[in-house]
Image (cartoon, rainbow, N blue to C red; front, side, top):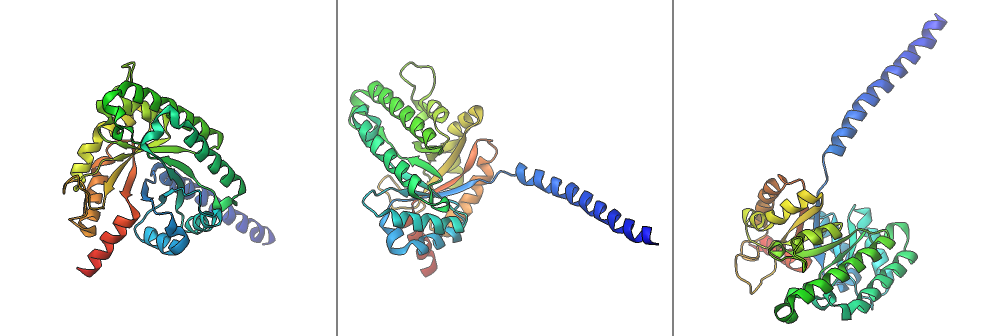
Length: 301
């Protein structure tokens, strides 16, 4: 009898362990197979993390956001960044350092890039484990410069050089670096004509976020699908962006007129369409201020 009492628990233990490994392994494989897409948003008004950081995080949490592109204001005390990032991390939200300027594509502006990366490096070195930026996000739009019309090849060539410089700096910091790109960038070639400018950018960056601004899910998808296809071929992730602010570019660009409820319905449709591409990395909503106003307006209607 003593032998039975000793062996039975052993059998039970083995059976439980086998069951755990079998189910756990199956569950783990299933979880790994399901890629978690990003839902990102731009936060340009950095003063908000000082005045109402918890409110910002609460709003984003309620909207399902898991990545915040936070504009860097070097005049702001780093304490506010540390507090905000720590609070966001507690809600499983990453914060990426955001900055950019159209002129940053030019070699004459290289010192501005150096200043930004030095600031990030110093910040990362002084921040706690849960207070560090999880990535870098740049918004550089040289097609807004007059030189884009007068000397486009030179601007593109300089832009390429600065992108390579930024990627090198980000690699030294061991941080992923992503960029905002217009959805039509595939219509332009690099100066030597070997590839589209969009595919060249995809090869450099960890991922890209398309400014594929339209006011329907199918409209955003149709704007984004050419670069989604390029991303799939290159094994790179592409996020599709939507606009919430009132814009002079026309009613079809933003969800400002349609409202938050309609936008949410269209984002579901967009995700269903875009996830047919392996490159689809998620959604990005521009921006916190416009989005919050849109949601608040839906409450009053």
